[in-house]
Image (cartoon, rainbow, N blue to C red; front, top):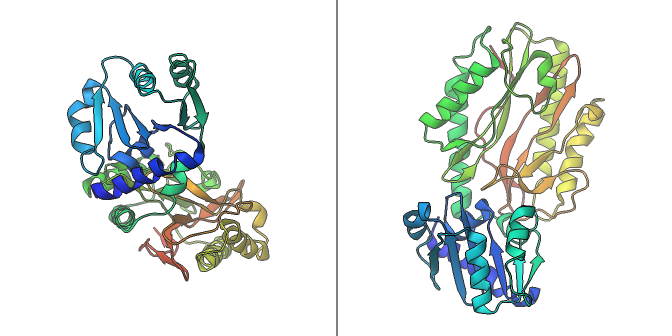
Length: 365
């Protein structure tokens, strides 16, 4: 990620402090730290004031932090703490005379909040500020979209190289392991979530964990997989069938595919996330399957696998160019099985760019 791009993000936060009546903003959530500084370690805090960026970490990350946060003006000043970071942050707040310090309430533990609050001067206070950086992160830059696109392509290659080896009798766990192995061989840092492989009746569990069940003749098989590449996530779901699918499977698959295509067709700048969700549900309702669709139609993704916006029925967030979202309707019928089809797309002014190259037909094995 270009250093000047991260610097412009920090500048946006610094310049927004006055409007929020803040003297500083404290960031400690790892994805937000990476977004603003490039730091990829597990222990860091960034204190943003109108004219300075102070980064705190511990000795394990002294060299790494100096390298990863370099670039941009004003430069980030790295402070290596030999005490808990909350102690060093509180001392700095006191020294600078900061009074109103914004923090991320959904991203800070109660223990960390109390540890920091108890060390602040009486004149200083912590002010909860929700979703500020996450709102910025919803709109991806061209360099971020490039990373997501390459992550999606890597993920799809891992799928194709694995699915040609799938045979009846293979366990769900073995298949999931093979998928993750292929991801890493292709350059992924790690899976973007625990790979889902669910067969037979277990395919009706939207977030099933792969187990010892074997792929048997007559089984639907859900594969939901994603990879992290250069910090950015991908996400895709495709379906296999062991043997020859019957008419019920074909009808249900056709309905889910129609719903997915209708939702993709509804994506464009200015429409709400909820309207995309309704497009998918309307199709499934026409097939009598709307009650079997038990989750939202999709979600944003980027530095996290699940980010705003949520593509759900009640979400009024207007879609904007540069948002990277998934489109993944599904149906889940207890005692029968489940079907889900998922692509990653990027919102444009007039529609969307489908990043996922993998064909959507039901794969027969």
